[in-house]
Image 1: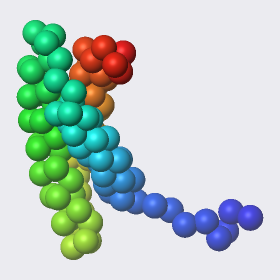
Image 2: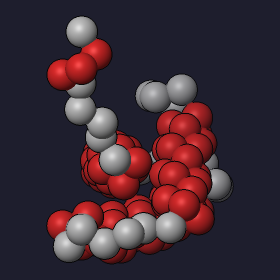
Image 3: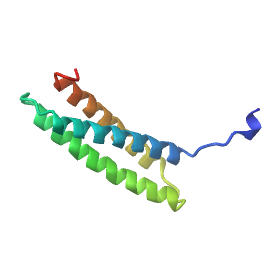
Image 4: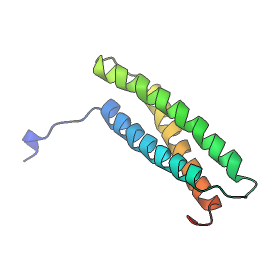
Amino acid sequence: LASDLRRVSREKIVLAELRETRSLAQDSLEESRENSFSCPNWQSAQEQLHSLYEQLSESYNELEEAVSDKLVVSREALDRWQKEASQVLAQITHLNSLSPSLA
């Protein structure tokens, strides 16, 4: 049974995680633009998410290029990119907690 299984590289797994997180962040940013709230922390949280989104997009493009060029990616770089994705997800959760309609 297990002889026909293929192993997916960690690079491709992290790339998929970054792609999904980037998509969630983009959706959250679009929704937050449509719903403006008077919460004092709202604007700050939205700006921080945008900054993290931009950073994540750069990381995604960097990893995508490395994977397509079949370059070896260090474990440290993959760990860093996964940490960036976690930070974006935490910021999305924080932004949602500030939104009365999403909390």
